[in-house]
Length: 612
Image 1 (cartoon, rainbow, N blue to C red):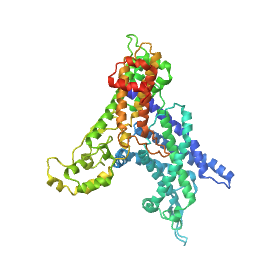
Image 2: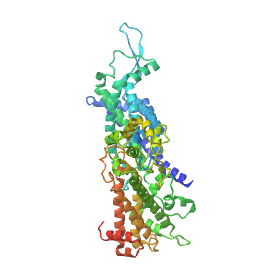
Image 3: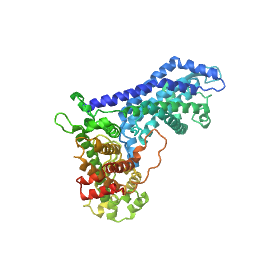
Image 4: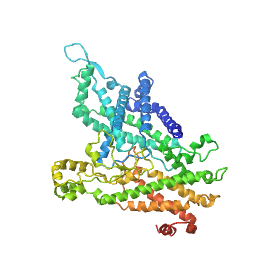
């Protein structure tokens, strides 16, 4: 199909290019790691000669081949798990469901295996006491036969690689690292990558330090388990004369800690670099507005922008529309042009129809959410403390208890198809109403209807008393399933980047049409555009009156996960008001001739008088 063709051409090829560049950057990155791992300030010449001979050895070449395979696998996982709409968990149990999902568990397992491969390559590269898993040792002082003993230093680096790979996968879910952000300012790929290197180095070093701290604590308490299992499996002995690393004295080895940290930094730097290159390559694309050949018609902007799959192409098309409407007079002229023969504005009709459809869908979603919150209970109940719920379970009257134990409205529901979702969760979760334009394709926010009650309304007090032992379990469930502040509002606007581009594209095109639209194609849809924007503004203003909707999120920590989606609702509100002012400032009193309802005309007058 045309969508699959576009996906293979635009997305897959760009992902392949990003993987190729990541593999090409691997030799210089490995050289820096070798220099830092064998650093010796007292013998600089010997240090440099050893590094040079190591980089040219067979072991280094074999390690580079293995590391290249790891980079290719990381790039494939980036392509498989990326999303342009972040998955926002509205409760702790929803976040736990994401972490325990079979698909995520498989990804974590693969990352753990790749971390072990990188740890082995680092151990071989550092050499010395880290080079091999077993070595010949003398267990007795009477000159008996030598035996093969376990090299715990080598094992320590291997297990640290597994732990850091597994932690990287879990933190990717928590921080939404698979979310692909779109930069507002378009730059060359080289400049964007150069600008991101300091952040990649900082995040790699700091995350490796935190992961090493957690791994040391884990190894101190549980290190004897993998050590005993490997000795039994490979028939290795434990060297009694060597210090055990699962002790305080063994873990205070500064050289071991340094090499573990530098190996973890190398692992995360190569993976973060691959991720950053993928983000840079996949978010750079331009579509022709129209084509002279029918075979390429499906690649045009008007066709791609109307497609539902793949979703990233729709986002790229909307971004391209916002850019051309602001910066490209020649491409704007193609949008305003008429078809030959026939003289129909097909480009403008297709673009404006899709943008207005997006705005209408968001408006309907906000209205439905607001009505559902108002119907299912006061909005304040979403932020009340668990203590009040716990106490009410024991002392409230029957009708209050029934109302309390009904499911809260949440715009994001956990995955009920997962084998980890409990039967209680399936009963408590309401049916989902799909209001997003990305129905069935992405992790879009949903609006939940009122769900089934825990107890049948036809039953009497006797049935309630028979289920009294369930109260402690349900209390703990509600404590764990308490709504996270702002999460429901963030999930509701998770895909609003597309609506921001639609607002910018429409408003800039309408503004440019005042002087560039020779055929007046924009004037036919100007009433619909103004009405859609005014209705959306009313819905957005109503939403910001709800608790937590207008509160600013906490400042994001310095991670590779982009946090811009947390403030999309504020960006949408600003873009909406700016779009209306852009149109009213350009047309001025000419808007009085546009056919609008009296209510919309009154609101528009506020913009004309700069009172909004």
